[in-house]
Image (tube, each protein chain N blue to C red):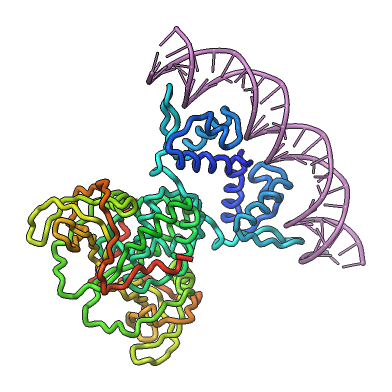
Length: 239
Length: 239
DNA sequence: CCAAATAGTGCCAAAATGTGTCACCATTTG
DNA sequence: CAAATGGTGACACATTTTGGCACTATTTGG
């Protein structure tokens, strides 16, 4: 049995039995007393809180709150999660957000350093505001899943983004803009792009975008986006 | 150099160079060709997608999308994250939500089985609705961090919850109710409790609750909460 | 107070696992 | 065809993990 599996078995047994002696654990996982004690020490180093009582009637107890999950996430998944929660906490007051932040900070810490830079840069393009109550939300659609990869490439690689857009009157056009910001007016999300042909900013509702595509480009420049909306809320984690 | 560090070094090198031969990697990380090949095999087992071309001009290429983070999260952190995103996706259309869901599903899969049950049960108490635009949001406060642990204990352990409540007119009272649901009318969150003294449901804005405390109790019963609001959005993951 | 039950530590030899070398195979490219 | 590449198997050697033992410290029941 590998070390990892044995650790898992020890944690499972402790969780099931509530309290257990070292010898009982050793029998359970088929290892020696000495090894179990070493494992307990290792688990404590990993952050598990294991309380011990010596003497008759004593034993080990695992604090269930200290249990750790070891989810493995891909980079796009991390981006999506962080953006979701960043938007959420900006859009309204979120209960339990200290804990969510702590979780996100841990996830972020596990990312490779340059990806963190990308992430910060991407989140820096998020702007949050308040939707005016007069908006018509009846035709709100689902956003296409290709959006995030295309946006990531375009925003981080300073490329144009090209997409099909269906406007409020249902007209379908193919657009190409410099991506400058993402604007959230809950529950609506907008892409703010500079349209070089028209020489001005344009807003595009993300749920009306389809077939997005990043297009390499040499003329891209960052422009100052004239917002009255609040800026990115992702400040707590920017330590 | 430990195995883990060497694996990290290999991943870093592959990411930096784009493509690299086994021999170059071996030189880089100071290990033998054989060991590097074994490491590559191990990394593939871990989920890294590493493309290889044999022959002249060949080499190894790491698919950057396949990079994994190995964040370790505690159970309360997972709860907080899942609740946040569940609320978010219900409150509005969330872009990139397929990816966020995939990430959450992975996190959930890493939780111990009984914690998943608890989580489902807890999320089942979430109700989402639309806030009427007439609400006064000016005095919205921060929710206290003790909320989640107290709620978790009370909802899952079928206990009463006791707390200080400051009502709309600023009056401070100590309340004790059977927790029945959590209602989200973005950006406001409410605790819906059955007040046994008054024999009726009461809504409490979470940002007005302080010093929450779960109180063991034998008379608790689940009641049907008469909502016109939508029910829990957390259905996609309830496979 | 004593004896039994418990957690915890240091040490060392034995067992298990990881590593390097070498020979070899398969595929691709100039 | 020869060179450059990824990939596998076998085996000796290096490193790490494990088990056993002796020991200490603390608690509890009698």
